[in-house]
Image (cartoon, rainbow, N blue to C red; front, side, top):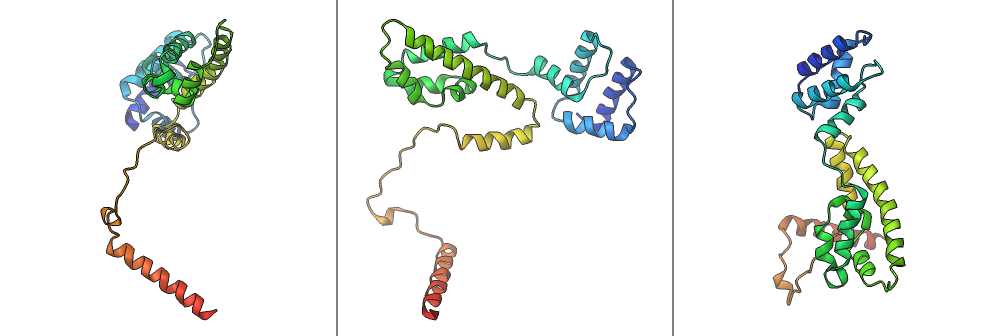
Length: 215
């Protein structure tokens, strides 16, 4: 969405809410443009129309309220709690020997709730003749899933650029499948150091040698 399009949409809001009179219109336009620039004009227009049509309080919308409407209209469909547990239960039944594969099939929000495939495997191997243990697992999962789903909903409202940084940092803390490192039979199979790297190592050695000689 462009700045001029933001101005047009603010004019629509002002027409619907005559009391909406920002002190500095230029700053207001810039603010709405910056905060909503990652959405298209059509999306924001639809969100504003949806807000106006359902509003019963008579107050102009804030940027946050419009983003909530955008998420409602165009955001990913949220998996309800029971449906999420159904997916987990199906995964548990096949996780005694195939936890990695079952974990990979689950949606990211459920993966983050569980943690890693080892948890699925542990649940699958639980001795539970009367079903009580499974009820406890469901209770713990449901509570954790509600928190994770709420977190995901809040993150979806963030600036995509900032969200990318947050997710990048989170990936460092989340489960990553182990990658096998091929064994090397001889040093010659490893890629040799570049001349630049060798020169740096040489300079470091010279400095270290000089420091020892000076002592």
